[in-house]
Image 1 (spheres, rainbow over the protein chains, first blue to last red):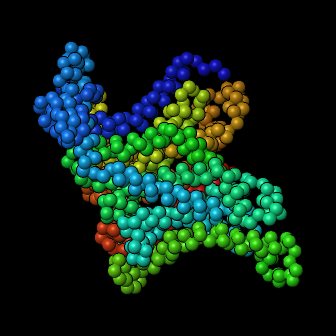
Image 2 (spheres, chains in turn orange, cyan):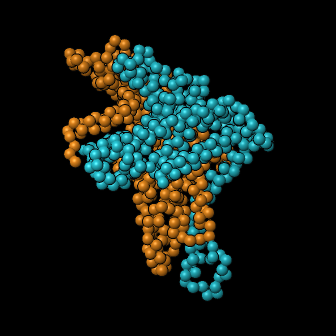
Image 3 (spheres, each protein chain N blue to C red):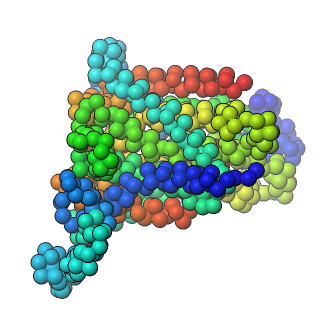
Length: 324
Length: 305
């Protein structure tokens, strides 16, 4: 079937328009994060200032001095104001009214006042803990459900599946009470990990994967005298690796984005995960949206980079989970 | 079953040794996960029902019978929040249409289409909190949306997306839809790739246009995925919290304009400490969700046959 040239063009137009809708909010946050003044991007009777040129660039203290005097060089700071030079160069071009000077100052402020690196580490630790424990528990539990015959197997499977039916908010309140009164989970890493470790969805997913492995393989290993544990560890785990990757991705994303539970559990800012830390930052800089924007960019860009590197695995992993 | 009732032979054959060993192993493999599920799921499930009959407030509890439920049914805010949760469900059909359409578009063999797919999926990996904060900037009086609309001459005065009680919920739903489209698109892609190409070719020879082809081949072909996306996105819509929390500043919005049942639950339990009352709310709301999901699955399942 031949595709006409205009059809190709119109398809790309659709793709690009949708991409703009997806990307523009991020671009907007980046734009806000480098604004030097509190003046608006859009204004009455003037074009919107949407293109940035280097303005007050540097790190540390002394940005205000550099703004007036052009430079600041000291132990505690390192700034140069490039704005006048670029302003002069841009002046004769028709682009000039659309431009504004960009600064790194908002980023410096955020890193000074908010331990955003710490939030990253906390989020990463909680995520890794949750993913590893989930993979372990689910891959253990799914094996007998798929590959062994024993009394009560079907009942147990239905019981595990039933966890998918009940909405999470139903158990939230008693979970909170138990976490606080019995387990003292408040302000601990394990308090953020353990409640999410066993997942009915994960067990269900891996059970499907185990089914695809031929029984003969296991029987052969058993006749060779392998224990069930070593069969699971040496033969099955390597074979179900794609399924484990899918579960890891699903678990990682939901753990990384988890907000309400850490919000309820954490009071110590040192232990904040990224979403809780972001909400805290939002309150901290409530008057200054440029600093809030800088915080958002710092928090999201690493995730976007990691996603772009592993995008194939992410997308295929999720698609694989749907295909079952 | 039979294994249990049979007495063990004096000299066990190799086969029955296998079986017994396997049975013990089976329970051992299952035990850790079941332990976790019991402590963090099944016990809370029993507890929440118990709490809902008490006036539990984190310090003590006494039995109050069904009075929580009676108060709940007489609470206008509860009914309002339930209504808002159902309004939130409008996200689901919109998400299905948009993400299926987008999946069809990116399923074509175009150069660089993988890049676009990745771009569309990206919001799914970013936390709803960050996205809520980004949209706070977008929805602001001097934000992107008002700016663009004014530059285009669509509006003269800025729209108060997050302050106007009539607009709060639709704006937040817009964020939920924006965030979900790429995610569900990937699910539909998996379904689309399972439809044999020959069907389209046959239809094309028979003179069906593109729209007809998609209506008569694609839609029935991805029906199971439509049901799946419908169930997943409606459950997600009913328990949306993060976006609402951020975009209403943790308050539930002016005049409770963003107060969904999920947010009302959060407020009663963790702001007002009315744990007993919130538990009753959780039980009723969950029953609604379960019934809704079952009906959804039934409808989808019957249609498929």
